[in-house]
Image (tube, rainbow, N blue to C red; front, side, top):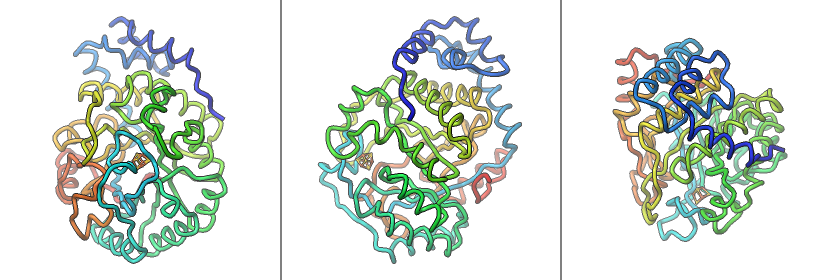
Length: 365
Ligand code: SF4
């Protein structure tokens, strides 16, 4: 199993803090980016001119590999109950918000609405609750989603055991798994996860491997931007992806970049990652992993999304609701967080076309 190497990462963080403009420039021009060069690319010492060059290089690599196609996906939240106490999340068990688990029929209703909007790539999302992550229940739901016409089905729910993932793959053709470590810093991890199953750092860290062992073909990883020093987490994640690609090469990996957002009942005392740092980070990952898919969600505001999508991204969500049942019944009280890009699917696809991109409804194959 992947084990974090604190000594290695602390050394790389120091390297990043001290990188000179000349070292950053060399890293931008490197043909095969190393971890040390990646540390230089995310350095706070980057100048505006070098950031421009980094963005240009990232743009070229992305479009050379992925062309002008951007795939669209949509999340379907089916349960906002959660047994965990994550202090940054609106669904946490102590937060007195209305709770709802959609019935099977309600899930179907939401899914049919999303299918009518053309989506073929669906992400099922739920808080961590034994009922919402029951493998038998999920098998039935995923099978039904395929029947409705979705061609790519992924989950972002409680981490499961290998045998449960294997059942979802063999019986229901589960395509994708998304799991974010939130932060790789162990001390901070236990502070922000004071209660619930999620306190188990190793169980969460081993999730992508269990998914890959079970044969899930697409695995999305990331961390929550705004919890920890993003450079430290970025370096841990880079090591984690390198390990997964080497040891579980049959699965494809992607990176998502969730930034902390406001949510009802949550104290927003976190220091978020600014737009400039976000852009630098995304472009640096593109140089390190030229072949990897990258997603950006509606957590980002419209003008910013339109600006950064061409530089590194391959898939975007659109028209999203983070409330169970939120597509057919607008109910903001049930939301996990407020989306920043509230444009309709039609508006997002129109903006993509205006920028010269082809919105595609299926995921990368
Ligand atoms: S982040 Fe996930 S596990 Fe934590 S409280 Fe929110 S929904 Fe539950």
